[in-house]
Image 1 (cartoon, rainbow, N blue to C red):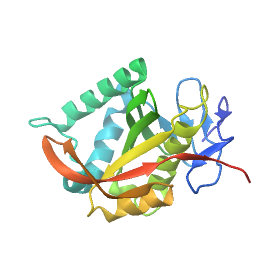
Image 2: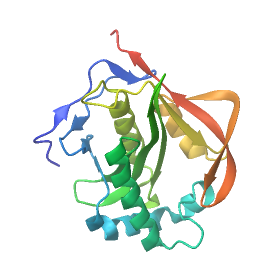
Image 3: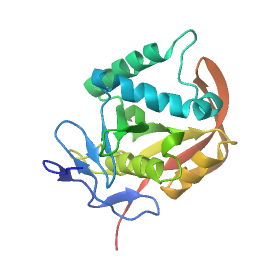
Image 4: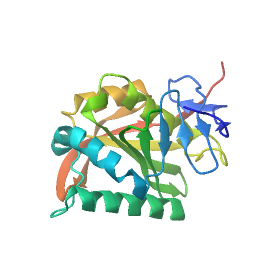
Length: 213
C-alpha cells in the first residue's frame, strides 16, 4: 500500500486516553492507516461493496440495519454513493469505505451530522464484514477516522466531540468504542432509526485532549 502523496495529520489532538498516531491524508480525501485506505465510496466499488455487505449481513441485521423499507442491496449501494457525494459537497458528513492493500473492501466508517456551531461535533458509525473480523481492522478504521476528525483544520476536521450510538447488547462495538477512547454516558439513552425502525442506543462520546507527553 503506497503512502506516496499523503501528508501526515497527527500532531496535538488525540482521542481521549489515546496516543498520537499518524494518519496520512491525500488531497482527494483518502486516509491511510497502517493497513487500510479509507476513501469515499465510488460507483466502481459496487462489486466490493456488495461482497462486504453480504459478509456483514448477519451483524447488520441484528444491530444496524442499513436498508430502507423495500430497498435491495443495489439500491442501498446507490444511496450510499449519493450520501457520500452529498456529505462531501456540504461538509455535513465524511463517509469512508475501508480497503486493504489488495483492494478488498472490509467495511464502512462514517462521520455524519457534522456541525460547526457552539461545538464542532459529529456522529460516528461503522460496520465491517465478518470475513475480516478478529484482525483489528475495525479498530484501525475507527481509530483512523477518529484521529482525522480531531486533527486541526485544515488537515483534519477540527471536531471537538464525536458521538456514537450503540445498542447495549452489541458488545463487540462497545468494546471497540472503549478501545479507541469513547466513554459511555451513564444513564443516557437515545432512540435512533435504522432500517425504518426505532431502537434505543447507549450514548458513547469521544473528545480530543492535548498530548502533553
